Image (tube, rainbow, N blue to C red; front, top):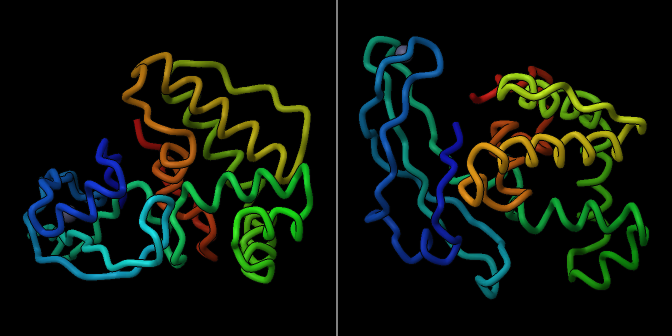
Length: 198
Ligand SMILES: [Zn+2]
């Protein structure tokens, strides 16, 4: 699960286990969950210097007897790098290619290529999720002329525009927002469509 936190990455990391994560509702039954400890993972993000350890809240639904990780919206499932590193780098590859983007961003080109392959494989599905978000929030589904990766980017921007019309600055930055909408699964191998948050 994703928590669309307003905290900066630096503040979240600095806060550690003092960060006030809200109690979310169980995605399966709708009960408010209880806190269920923390776990640690590594993160590479702008402003952190090198990779560092972050703590992630776990919450548990008593009726379902299941616990869920509550990822801050800059964390992507299965990847070390933050959504704000991955998203803009992917966008840049469309204009400048993988190697020049890798050189400029400092992301190893093999890593960047693997992100791009994964994103390409998911692009169509992600475009659907972002389009559904627009509809769920009362807008028309965006008309997108492109297909593949450009379509996913266009749909993400359309969903972000919808969210900003409703929430203003509360929608947050593009790639953190986009990562929230897709359940932090920008680059996973999971083929289930993440449910559209509304
Ligand atoms: Zn439940």
